[in-house]
Amino acid sequence: MLVKSQVKYIQSLSQKKLRDQEGVFVAEGPKIINELLGAPSVELIQLYAQKEWMMRSEKLAVSFDKNKIALIEESDLERISSLVTANEVLGVFKKPVFDWVLDPIGKVSLLLDGIQDPGNMGTIIRSADWFGVNQVICSEDCADLYNSKVVQSTMGSITRVQVLYTDIAIFLEKYKQLPTYAALLEGTPIQKISKIKEGIIIIGNESKGINPVFLSPSIYKITIPGGGNAESLNASVATGILLSYLT
Image (cartoon, rainbow, N blue to C red; front, side, top):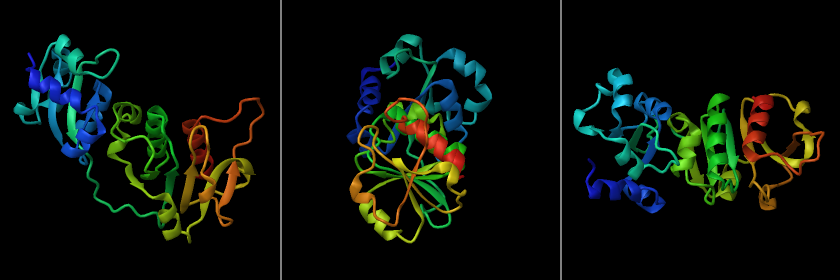
């Protein structure tokens, strides 16, 4: 049975301030845990698992220090889980450390302006991973990468996609020589844009779009043509479509 201090500590990691202080994040569920345990960019701090998961994942779990694995009952898992329905296993991990320096030169990068919905944020990172984009630059008001909903939505892609939070205006000025594409409601249809091997693709806030301050004359304005009556596309859906066409 988990002691009160353990429960309190794991619950406290729902707060960004404490995650940042500790340099850790929480992930839940068999699929994402298996991904994280097999990733070289993250380190396991502690695993809390039900017997059923341990039996299925014995070969994976046995490679870790036994002191880092706690076998718990469902009732204990429910106490520390942030999910509506606790799902067999929860892990506390150190934040990923990558073996490359984030640099947009010679690559395709995503730049997110004010993406505040955690589900959208996580799905965008997962889409980036699918299309081979391994770096995402975020404005400082984007959802926190290690918010539990973001982590779950990435389904393990946070181990392969490096995310940087920074001042977008400064970043764009620094790399103004790179071709930059802004996803807008009005612009050149993406079907008319050639595939790119280098450049920055800007995705805007779910309701406000891209801050006009960032839309300099040198930026290519592109759009996804539609034939229906919806006001706009979901940010994560739009990202997937753009990456499919442009990469």
